[in-house]
Amino acid sequence: LGGGGGGRVRGRKDAAADEVALREKLLSFIMMVSRTKRVKMLEGEPIFKEGDAVDHFYVLSEGRLAVAGQAGGAARQDNHPFGRIEAGEGFGEMSLLAGKTSRSKTITCATPTCEVVSVLGRDFLRLVTKSSVVKESFDMLSRQRAEHNTAVQAERATNSAE
Figure 1: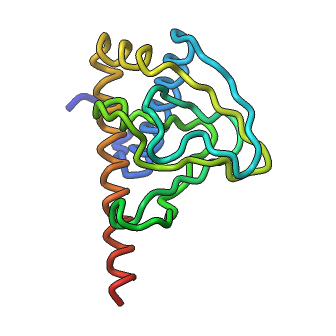
Figure 2: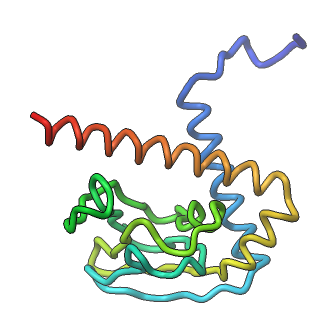
């Protein structure tokens, strides 16, 4: 109800723009209130590898990252691309929030140079614990990434069965 708004109906693009704006504010807040470390990397260098300890949350400030992981579980030795991470996006939260001890993906710099900001995992988890808004936002982001990863794995399984 209520007047105004010109009868505008919010669509999927508006929701996506709202999500991006929320993520940007959330990441800025986390970097503002946490101890951070900036690391420059060269193309091909890993930020972390599958199996590494889960001890940081990251924000990509410059460049693009490639995300790869095992296809069909640990029995296969080859990594397959899951996607990419663009400047301004955070990553590494899924393993922290799930309480995992080792990384399930390998993330590498995919441009000539990348700059990553790292936040200690315990600082990230402290913020998530203290703020329901931060927790709900990262829970939503983690669900979306998990759905995407599941879809990529299903597509890969379908393609390899053909």
